[in-house]
Image 1 (cartoon, rainbow, N blue to C red):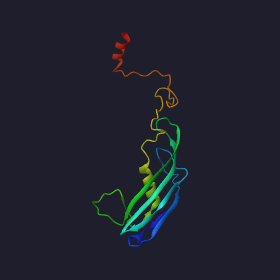
Image 2: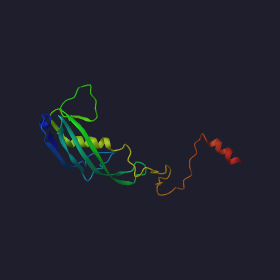
Image 3: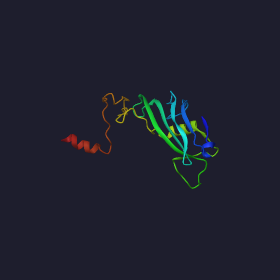
Image 4: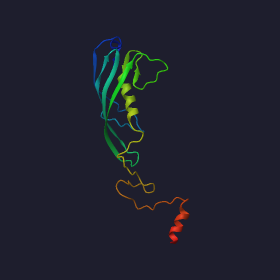
Length: 166
């Protein structure tokens, strides 16, 4: 969705409502496409005291695979997106809260896709205390312990021999 902000940059007091569902099913995360149901975006763009603001809530369902145990997971995510929109910025300025809209037209789809990519964690886990898979047999350790014998660090083998002698 492309939104013309020229009137707001020129001092208009109008409020541009945002209510849409984006199809980001092609968005790739860790080699798969986790956003199957679309992304709901609700909010508004408005000017206040000569400053243009973007305030919206972004909600989506994430379908993927746990990075530790490889089980399927689904999670509901939401975050608030609050940015200040400007038509230009000094070249030495570096502010994360500002979005430069040089042409006066905001590509909201591109902005939301970028924000979701930055929002998602580097590792997706089914739970905070996920134990993962056994390195030897591949059993999901969340379902119980495996019967594999633990490998001993070769540097500690001599110490274990001392314990065995007692």
